[in-house]
Image (cartoon, rainbow, N blue to C red):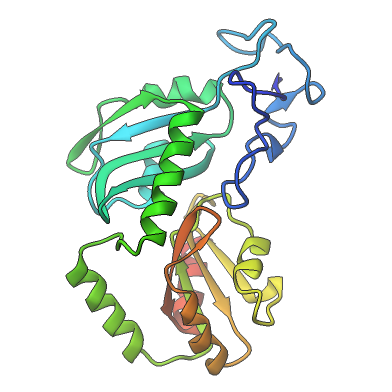
Length: 258
């Protein structure tokens, strides 16, 4: 069906960082032909004849400041979301984000959502480029390593105090995962602890789409408490928030996605 090979900027679609999963690795359901081929079948309103398609990313502006990755997925309902990167400046969310889609044709459908509402706010959707997306990733990583908080200091302090006083039951909730995150990614994030794939639960919404959250069952409460040292550390190019949780909260989250 669709081209599978190099994108228009000359880079192979598989050169993303370990956390930003490769777009071309999503499988032949999106792309057709052998890797490296330079043609595309006539299966869309327009086709890339003799040239590779552009990198499938759009930029959003005017997002609500409490926006989540699940909100973006709902906004682009029926499209395949590979990654959502929220843009921050001096630790504060700017209301902008980059959204990487499953394949180039979906950019056209995403642009049709321009000036549509998310909650009470209308959101602008623009074409973007791979270089702009990568630059935003670099800025986010630099901001995180520099110690700048992603949210306002009072709220972060309140969250920290709640985490410190919370009782540990051996279960942690992870927030901020890109939709492309896998159980293997999470096991690598907690590589100092003994985990199995069965102890990791990726939550989905009622339509089966990832929510950007997961629950991890540790061997005991001591391990989950020690694992909190990874709170706000980066997994690839994203920072992950950790919260003490319980088996009851885990079961409720899993049940909501059924």
